[in-house]
Image 1 (tube, chains in turn yellow, orange):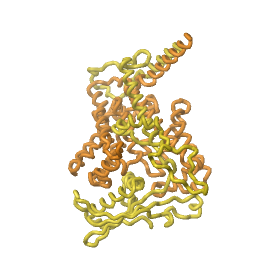
Image 2 (cartoon, each protein chain N blue to C red):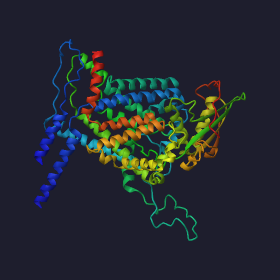
Image 3 (tube, rainbow over the protein chains, first blue to last red):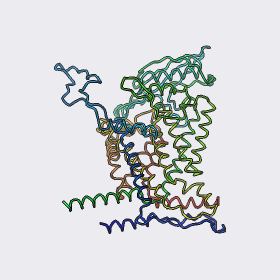
Image 4 (tube, each protein chain N blue to C red):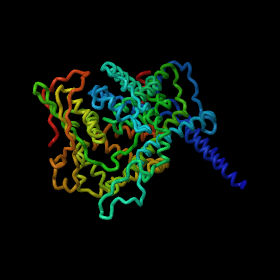
Length: 261
Length: 328
């Protein structure tokens, strides 16, 4: 085994030894003044002193633990025991016990780890999960707005809107605005209403709309993805201008159209 | 008993050797340098896009006012039930309240990302770029952030740990002009940076796969349909897949199993090309069909951490040499 390790070490040392320089310099250039041979890899193919390696090992282990715990903690939740009855004898659903009840089982290991690592995760921005299109891809949320200015002029619009939000990343940022409102309740939607009222200098009405998805058979029946039946208004909010730090913008020459209703 | 103790000691020594080889074998910085070039250009573009409505997204009174974030979102609940702002969730933009300040920081950030892309004062640019990328991401979280911001920060966090400007950079050209034409040395920190990037990517895919296991549509093999049938995401009409349920099911199941087992299979040299090919397919598909070009590219760049420096040099050195001949 030791021999195999030596062989491996030698092989890696060979691999790690730099190759010839990129054939980049002109031939007529003067000879390099400070050119030195590349440092070969240390014997055994491993660099740095033992103490440096020990310290870095501790740091990378701690960091990787924090990287692992962040999505893990977001994925775990308090749970009720398997014998908890979700329905009574008549089949009616039973309300879950209050948050303080001892019925709830806590994920104690991940909670403890998370409590110790949370500030580090925040500082280096690894405080998130990676639930891309999980647990299931769902429909999207759209914001429709209408701002009425004191002089009676009206600004209407929708976000996201492919026609006005370009390039695609800018469109996607607006899509995230409406998506993430849905997850944070009406108070965050109120911010949008107030922001639009401030920017356009009037009173705003904002609708949070859910755009549902069509199953394959409906598409095969040639139902369009933006069929009227796929849109549902979830909430309506009114906004007033904040004490503005920026002057209201001039009305655009053509008013953007809303999403299909 | 003695043989058991010897066996244990031998095992521990073997593990320590393997650990050292994994983390501390000096590596050619070619892969790290290529990722810097690509990620730097992506960071520059994705942050330049904020310029289109900087005040609304990042200003103190924008879509998500800073005060609202600090008082209701970035808070922790104390034992007595009161809410307290979390000090460790930070962003430069939390302390900015004038347009000129905002634009100054933004222009500085774009300059830093330009330096990172070109490899000009690279280590400094990478460090500042990391702090700035976090600032943008934290300011729009929640609000307008998505996977792109996570991956941008992931890339630049590890780039700053290694000599990411050793190749394919202005710094390299400057060294060559001064006569330092020797090859950049193999570097332990380059290896540590690449290893961290690889492991982080494994965690990303593992938890993304586990989260999908909870989804009924991922289990049923229909999730890919629901993703392509989303009009708001759609950039290429893939609704013809409605007539190809088997294709949808295979793509759905392959995605889940690939994400779940990425963290194991990518380390095996025989499996790695297949695993990376699927990664390029999945993220390329998301980029082309679902309009998330920048996110798709960011994930592909992160996957390049599994490409060997030798392979990178084989394809990049000839082009780098041509460019170097022009400038030296």
